[in-house]
Length: 442
Image (cartoon, rainbow, N blue to C red; front, top):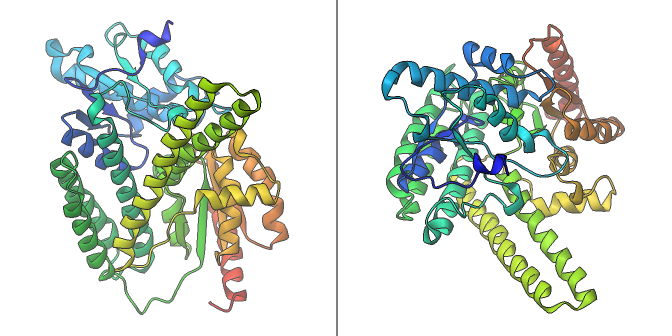
């Protein structure tokens, strides 16, 4: 009851919604999307030296690294905002977004812990934390007008997929760019263009304008590729969603792989959102089967409603995702997402894991195998130091990769810089290049 007063579903209107960065592009596109619906959303500045020191000061080190980063980011913003506004600062005008998930992952406790820390500051104690949950596939129910829930959910998912595509355009262009730095400048400009487009058109549902902008971006991005640069070995990235998406916390891992001669493909954020919808669908189907055995009419009806609800959500997400990717792929060939159903099939057939446990391990284990089976030359598992789901992934995947003679690297991170990191990446990339040559491509 104590936490429910400060953590949960609160009305998002007439407040400033503070969104911590996970993926830079995603955070800004989602903030723009929410602004279109009249929500004053703000993407937080992330993980500079001062904010990270704050995060480390108010955590014990036993929490996983993303908790430290997001803790530091919100404290840094609030302290800076209070100093700027002085007497006009009112903490009750702000809401802080920190989603959660169920299951064996510390992420489910971030918002509780962060509330305890914020409560120790008298000037910040009244800050409410908005929590979307994987338990209902990140629904906005209870936060906005009921009639807008479906529209904002669809618009937010489209923003998410668009952000993933921009990330993949960057990873596709940068290893082959005709001028150093051109790809990053281009994608930053594209992010700004699409942010304005989402802010203007998301609420009206005029996504064709946004998609046409995306097509133009993909077409123009192709012009930055130097055709004389030969194909490079492919490295697939799996792991904990925050660390693999947040460039500063993984110490620019993708750039470092590219400097050593790789073309990288990072697992997308939409893959996780698709997984949460799929998992809820599977849970609802299981409830139907259980209720049928006892022939309880009302529970059967309720679970059938959930099957229809999550089936519809999952179908919409996969259908819309494919349509948006098709818009970009007709101009530039970028990697598409793994199909969550296919990943589930892999772990079931090979008896490696189970969807019932949840966490990113359900995606990382079959995702690594899928990379290996589809012509990639190496796999990297990225995760916070001591992250249990990723350690499980490593324990299962590493011997499988060895058996398949596929180069594999575990990359765990905390707030320190390990002197052996570059050596590990160089050694891994040496193996990747040998694998590439054995395929007859190098």
